[in-house]
Each structure stands twice: as structure tokens, then as C-alpha cells.
Length: 213
Ligand code: B12
Image (cartoon, rainbow, N blue to C red):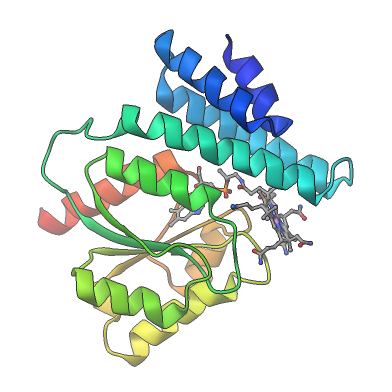
């Protein structure tokens, strides 16, 4: 079994075969991070095929399901690798009106792998619920994912509500998702933009170190 074969199975939405392939690869000693990284790129390709009308929504859904199944298999291999006490608390979710949760799930996994405690609010999350959960958890970060140009304004609302409530300085707001950018983060006054899950874990850890230094 090769990584290329696994990628092909996910791309064509063959969930069970993808699961079998992922288990075989891990048994062969494959690096779980490398598996996640290459599958993220495959999902990007699926997105481009969808945008070019070469495939249709059911095929995107099947690829998404296969990727999610593989993420669940890879997950136990990644957890507790840091062995350190929680280095920061994060509330994470996908903004209101948006159901794209694959990227957020990978970010969550990478944060947990790097020793963060993560409260996952799922998808279609109201801006006020991010804040409520952060208050309840005593979070350091609020992470908001958005995959559509129509839903990125919800990230801005989270920041606006934090300001209204006098809580803006209490949390670092981290944003991500394909249509977001550093420019958008600057425009809405987010504390951090990360283009992928690896960068999120590294930059958020660095931010915490700055805070405690
Ligand atoms: C998979 C997918 C779906 C799946 C979602 C399955 C699921 N359970 O999540 C299904 C089939 C359900 C779906 C539905 C729809 N989709 Co869709 N979908 C995609 C697709 C192909 C891939 C998204 C994905 O999972 N990528 C893989 C992950 C790993 O990457 P990622 O999400 O970008 O995440 C990484 C980074 O962005 C970052 N990150 C992400 N979140 C966060 C958060 C934080 C805090 C940080 C720090 C970092 C971070 O780290 C992640 C890991 O490295 C994209 C195409 C694309 N190019 O994005 C379209 C896309 C997002 N979908 C689109 C559309 C239009 C829809 C539908 C409206 C289709 C329809 N006509 O019904 C519905 C909308 C449903 C809704 N209300 O949300 C459009 C959006 C266009 C726009 N307006 O911007 C896109 C761009 C496709 C296109 N080119 O037209 N979709």
C-alpha cells in the first residue's frame, strides 16, 4: 500500500477501502502527519475539480466522508505525543451558516497533538456561542473556521461582540479557512491568521510563550 493509492481512494470517495488502506499504511510505519498533509492537498484538488464542474456535489461529499474516516483512524496515533500538561485552552468551531468541518477537525487534532486543551463547538456556530463557551472554559483562544465567502463576515461578528461585551482583550481570536487571508484578518482585527493546521499549532504555541514571557 502506498500514500498515492490512499489518496486516490479518498479522492474517489471509497470510504471502506480508504480505512483499510490507512490502517495498512500505519502498520507499515507511515508518518500520520504526512498522511494528513497529503490528504489535505487531495481535498484541495477535489475542490478544484468541483469548481471546474468536472465532479459534482455527491462526489465531493463522498471524498469528504472518506477523508473524515481516515482522520478518525489516524487520530489515536497522534494523540498524547507531547506528554506535557495542557499548554493552552482553545474554543474552536465553524461559523454560523457554514457546515464545512473537515479543516476545523484537522486543526483541532493538530492542536490536541501539540498539547492544547480544545473545546469543539462543531459547525454552524452562532458568534455569541463562541464567546459563551470561551467564558465557560476560561479559554486563551477563540478559533473560528469559515470556508465560504458568504460566511466569513461571521468571523468579524465574533470580534465585534467581544468588543461590545468589553471582552476583546481577554481572548486571542484565530481565524482560518480557505477564503480567509492575512489581509482579511487585519481588516477585521483578528489576532492571528493561519493557512493550515500545522501553522496554527506552531503560531498559537508561540503566542502563548510570548504571553507568559
Ligand atoms: C468538502 C467540501 C464540502 C463538503 C463538506 C463536508 C464536511 N463535512 O465538511 C460538502 C459536500 C457537505 C459541501 C457543501 C457545500 N459546499 Co463545499 N466544499 C468542500 C471543498 C471541496 C473542500 C473543503 C475541505 O474540506 N477542504 C479540506 C480541508 C482540510 O481544508 P480547509 O477546510 O481549507 O482547512 C485547512 C485550512 O483552511 C485551515 N483552517 C481551516 N479552518 C481553520 C480554523 C482555524 C482557527 C485555523 C487557524 C485554521 C483553519 O487548516 C485546515 C487544515 O490544514 C471546498 C473547496 C475548497 N477549495 O475549499 C468546497 C467549497 C468550500 N464549498 C462550496 C460550496 C458553494 C458548498 C455548498 C453551498 C454547495 C451547494 N451548492 O450546496 C454547500 C454548503 C454547505 C454549507 N452551508 O456549508 C464553495 C464555497 C464558495 C464560496 N462561496 O466561497 C467551495 C469553495 C467549492 C467551490 N469552489 O465552489 N462542501
